[in-house]
View 1 (cartoon, rainbow, N blue to C red):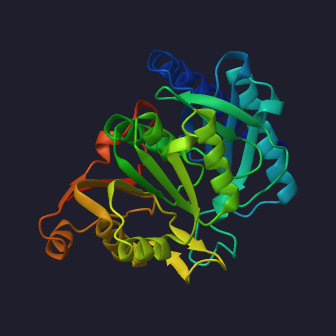
View 2 (view 1 turned 45 degrees about the vertical axis):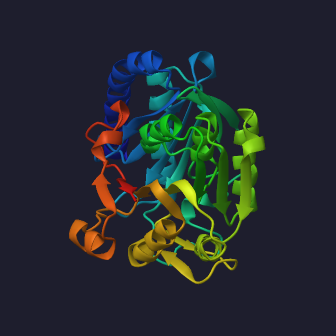
Length: 335
């Protein structure tokens, strides 16, 4: 037991020092760029497989994160004690009270793991409802730090949202798998003529609607509860055309309301075909894939879609807090 305590204390001290170093490095960048939510720590120390994100400014700051399954047998009680030591190290290093630090348990997604209510990261874990509003790219987004694995804001796509903000003026924009509507907010705040947001979840559509209302742009936004595959098929038949489509799908998704089970690797080609079918001449499709190791085959894509350009922009959207870290494969497709 004494040896285990010494080991845990040593890991807590390593985490304390690493967080202090990262915070010193990123705080100036965040203030300079107006970023209020960023990745602070991502399994930097193998023995401490936490992901920790910073939200807010000053005394209102908070930490949200997750513990990935540690790769050895352990007693559940000992694991809770270990996590409490790490939480205390986070609090001491960053000067944030424990009541503003939220760390959940996360496991890698697997096919069929969604149960019947969407991907695991979207499952509700609690009802504490610790909400806050953070600024990014000049607009505001409401996040929930306490109740889900994910807070409602994917930090690694911040610069992609900035691109949407810059390029959406006067355009008809379609945001598929819209989740909490961050891309919808970016498009509408960028001056989009209309933004259609599609998701199967009433809860996420409500959060997307709230985010758009928060920024005073809800009047130009529509929120559509529908299976994305079915929506694309119906939109093509109706002759709908968009100037910009944003496709940021989950890796796996299962729901009684959708047609079958979505598997991104298996269904990617069909999703892209559906998006291209509703994209007007000169339009752009932003596609981001969170599946580990995912990559589009340039030659196969070109053969299937002659005259359509494909560019890998993964590195172009990497921001300071994700330097050296894994990014979702992201593509810009032009017709």
